[in-house]
Amino acid sequence: MKQQMIAILTGDIVNSRGEDPQSWQSDLKALFLEYGPTPELWEIFRGDSFQLEVPVEDSLLAAIRIKALIKQHKNLDVRIAIGIGKQDYKRDSITESNGEAYTNSGTCFEQLKKRRLAIKSPWRELDEEWNLYLDLASLSMNHWASKTAMILKVNLDHPEISQVELSKMLDRSQSTISEALKRAGFDEIEKLLKRFASQIPHKQKAI
Image (tube, rainbow, N blue to C red; front, side, top):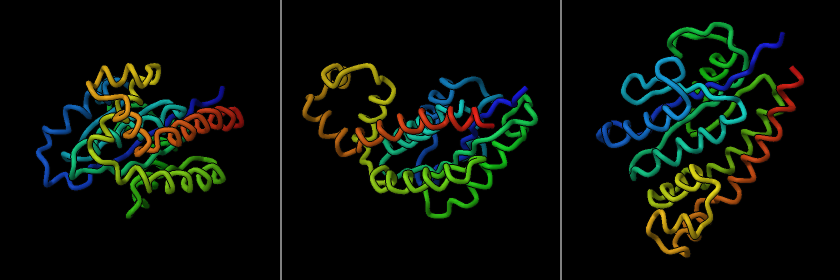
């Protein structure tokens, strides 16, 4: 029987010392709760660090949703390492569990340095391809304004709604919504997510 692959997101909040943690922590916890309970599937520790377990195919979307949430706070950003692999030991707490996914996530996080988003998986060619994509995407994502990030986050949370519906939900003109999504690179992000979602299952079947 094949072991199920999982993704572990390891991250920390950039410039967190200059911001009241209550301003972002409750929203981050609410987002994490969409993926499951704590501490089994996620934990926030040391005040500004976190780990989150998600299905492999959802890992990139989860990372971008976290990015958009944190970038709504003017002076904050987030570093995220996506580790993909097998899970050897499942404990009651994510920080006590172990396996390839955890090791890949930890190693990737230690190697981030000035990068804000990267991936490490069992597939070297995938890592090379996707870290290039993520570097290019970060040229836009790292500079999202707070309002742009907010509109993008709502759109990612509700992919089924139109821009007209989104404008009504946020009480903003459709042109404002359209311009914000264009600045955020939403069309390109959608293409990235679709490419990732189609590529990952083929890789998993090969294991």
